[in-house]
Length: 353
Image (cartoon, rainbow, N blue to C red):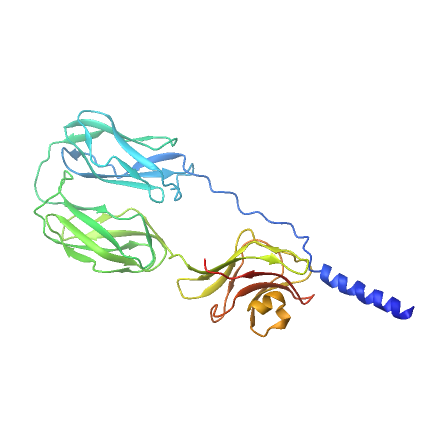
């Protein structure tokens, strides 16, 4: 009888240890979605405009708080809303990060006009009255960015074009001065050939790059011409490389589910990142996240080829990012391991994405 009671007591203690790793923690939800664009806004509208001269118009898709919606990529169309003549050039463009730039527009007849921008169900935007006047000629007085991306990747090449314009916004095709581009605001360094002579009034800058993520503006100078400052450019970090991917499966009667990826970040560091659908049994105990070979996927205790990345002590669901010391190497599986019970709770085989 005494031996029987001792056996019952040992079994009860083991069951309690395993139950300590069962999760009763509530699943947390992510932040509410950011509201999208509701209306358009026109910026950089020249006034007056020389008849037949090319001009630039920028249309932004704004949220109710008057901030640009960077997720907006719809088509934007500009039309002449009132006044004589026709609007020439490319009048429909796809927005990039919430901004559409029309850089080859022109109006052919003198008079007073208004322009209107529209895009789907967004509230339209209409300019104030614009005077279209006869071109007066004369030398260039100012610079203007004509082509420039609104979104770029850190250390990736992009190009820019700067025009030398007369006072009436027409191109001075006789201008041959040297034009310089420099970083006006924002982080990082502008690399590449940042000075070029204008040819027929146009300076082209290929192979530029920016070294840090953030919002930047560029400035162009040339002698006594009025400088020009670009619109804001979003410089984004380069996307990490996906090395392996996998899906968790539970083990030993316990639950581990959801996806994971092994990523090589732009600085060369390799990490394990779980997906938003990740979940593992947890609770009073802690769950270790390990990398191991295929033997360890069945039983972590049966292999010496393993490394513990971290332990999860709260939440037990959602996105976690763990650095892999020394990189992925030859590891084939990710394993969730209940530290207090010394038992696998799940594993995911790492396969090519």
